[in-house]
Image (cartoon, rainbow, N blue to C red; front, top):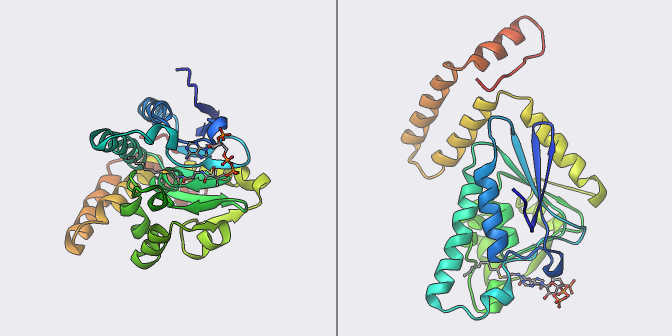
Length: 259
Ligand code: CO8
C-alpha cells in the first residue's frame, strides 16, 4: 500500500516506519492515524520480527495530535478523535512483535503518547518530551493519563501533565521515560542494533514474553504468576525451544524459524 504520511523501510527482518508530515512537525491528523492503523494491520509478523517507529526529519518525532484539526471539534467528535488515536496506539502496543520508538526530536502530546505505546523508547539528545494538553484546554487523549503514570510513576506523571512542562532527553532518561539517549546521528543505528539483537532471539519466546509482561501488569500476583507458568509451558511446544537448547548444548549458533 502507498502511504502519504508513512515511510516504510525494511532492513532484513526489522521494519522501520517513519511518520512524515513535515508541514506540521509530524503531527497526527486523522489521515496519519488511519495510515498507522492500516500499516499495523498489514505487518507480516511471520517475516518482521521487530518494528521501529520514528519521525521523519531531524527535528520532530511527533509534535502531537493535529491542533488545527482538533480546534473545532464538539464533544462527540472529540470523543471519536480520542478513541481513534487510542485504538491505533493500543493496536501498536499489542502487536505480537516488539516495537521500539526511536524518538528523534519533539515527542509532545500525542507524540509522547505514541512513544509510550511502544515497548521500548530510545531518544536522540535533542529529543523533548511533554504532555502540554492542559495548556490547550484538553487532557492527554491518546491514553497518556494511563500510560505515563505506569512508566514514570504517579507523582512525576501528575507533575508533567498538570504543568504541561517539556523535558529534555536527559531528564526523560533520569525518570525512566526512555531507556537510552544517543547523539542524533547514532540514534537509528542504535535502534536497528537493538532490534537485530531482539530479532536474533526465538520469536515466539519474545512474543510470549511481551504478552506476559503486558497481560500480567494488571493481574493480581497469583494470577500473574499462573499466567506466566502457562506461557512458559507453551514454549516447550515450539520447535525453537528445542533448537535453542540443542544449539546451546552443542555449542553452536541457534537458527530460529519462528516455529
Ligand atoms: N498540530 C498542528 N500543527 C502543528 C503541531 C500540532 N501539534 N505542532 C506543530 N505544528 C505546526 C506549526 O503550526 C507550524 O506550522 P506553520 O509553519 O504553518 O505555522 C509548523 O508545525 C512548525 O511549527 P513551529 O513553527 O511552531 O516550530 P517551532 O520550532 O517554533 O516549535 C513546537 C516547535 C514547540 C513543537 C511547537 O510547534 C509546538 O508547541 N507545537 C504544539 C505541541 C503541542 O502542544 N502538542 C500537543 C498537541 S495536543 C495532543 O497531542 C493531544 C493528544 C490527544 C488528543 C485527543 C483528542 C480528543
